[in-house]
Amino acid sequence: MKRHIPLLVFVISAAIGLSLTYVILDRERAVERREFEILAEEAVDRIRGRTEQNFSLIAATHSFFEADGGAMSRAKFQSFALGLFLKGHLSGMQGIGFAKLMQTGREDEASLALQQNYELDRQVWPETDQAHRTPIILLEPLDLRNKAALGFDMFSDETRRKAMLASADTFTVKVSAPVMLVQEITEEKQTGFLAYLPLASEEEAAGEKLNGEESIQGFVYAPFRAGDLHKAALTSPTPVPVLVNTTDVTDEQPEHLYTSEDYEARAAEAENLVTRQIEVGGRIWEISVIEAASKDNAFLYWRTFMLGSISLLFSAALAVSIRSRLRAREANQRLKEMSEKTIQEKDLMLQEMKHRIKNSIARILAIARQTAGASESLEEFNDSFSSRLQAMANAQDLLTRSRWSKADLKALLLQELEQVFGEGAKGIKLAGPAVQLNETGTHALGLVFHELATNAMKYSDVFADDGRFEVIWKVLPAKKGKQLELDWLEETGKVIEAPKNFGFGSRLMEALVAGEMNGKIDRQFTEKGVAIRISVPLV
Image (cartoon, rainbow, N blue to C red; front, top):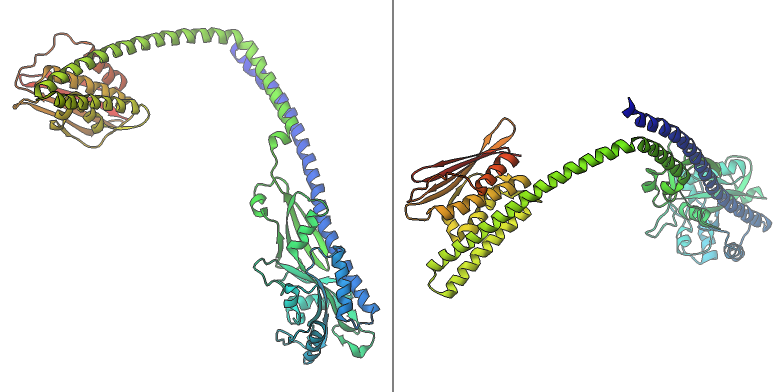
């Protein structure tokens, strides 16, 4: 029971601390949501305010037409519109203009007005099946975009026609559903909309009737680019750090109006989303608002982070203080065991190093003797002896690399044989399937092959005329996975006697095969040579 007290103390104290942390976190999140709602409301109000400001300009232009008696010359209208532009009032508006209402068949009047106002020889377009037409005869400022729209009959388009009819019913500013403006003649296009305000005729004969009894001369109107309008609203006088998506939801089928750049990418991970609907000239716009950039929560909720950290640290300190003495005792015991194990491993490594150095010297001497006996000159001896020593170095390099990656059995075996026998290794028969060895197997079998090859060089005469040297392996199924079975066969012209005592090399091979690889090694000495079988599981 005593050993569970530290855990119980930790759980209780941590639960209390984390409960307080959650309460503060929830409060901070509520404050953050409220702050963002205020920011989103500001963005929506700016868009609403920008449209209302522009609608007031349409109303002012309407009053200017009425004061002039309805017969507006291009010079007067241009001067008025230029004043609006110089004061910076038209942000988001493509321009402001007048479309004359007339019966179909009287298009020559509009063509004449275009000729007089702009010296433009253009017919009313496009063709229509309606009884009335509303060609644009005044539009300022006259840039390339607006010039392309002159003469366009807006009444021929159903979307624009609905807005004009609604405006004629109430004599108030009405807005169309989203459309592509005829001014969009460049590659950078934006969705737009139009706002209309009918201009009544003082004399009934000078106008046309649409829905009611009131005679109408035409419509004061303004084309809007939705993107420019939103950007102007959200960046002036100071930027609002939000992204918006605006949709016209007046009709059954919502229509996209504007989406801020990066909105789609940020929407999936946005923590706060505010959606509001506003009325714009008889249309309902739905505006969704998210943050323009993600926040670093680690710094955003730093109070919560600090409280949670302190609570956990305090709980952990209580538990650690209770168990400190027991842990110290356990640590001392583990340290003692690790020290003993390290000493044992160090001793084994020293013994292995001594043995390998001794064998390496013996191999070098044997290679020198064999090379000297077969060489006819000092230069030939030097080349052959250097190549054999290089083979030994390459084999050692393969053993080093095998500690980090798998190695091919045949490559490992061939390099060990070349390390010992040099060019003579090519006469050794190697046969078996491709086998990949893991780190333990590569290191262990590399040492085993090294010992066997060294013994063959010392005690056998496998390269005599009647000698035979083969290494054959195969992979067999086992109870758990697969098993490698390798036969090392040496046949020579002289008798090899079984050793009476096994030295360190034999003990090392036994330790590697049985101890590290859970396998076994069998040796059989005959009058003709020696046969060794190594069986190890493959992992």
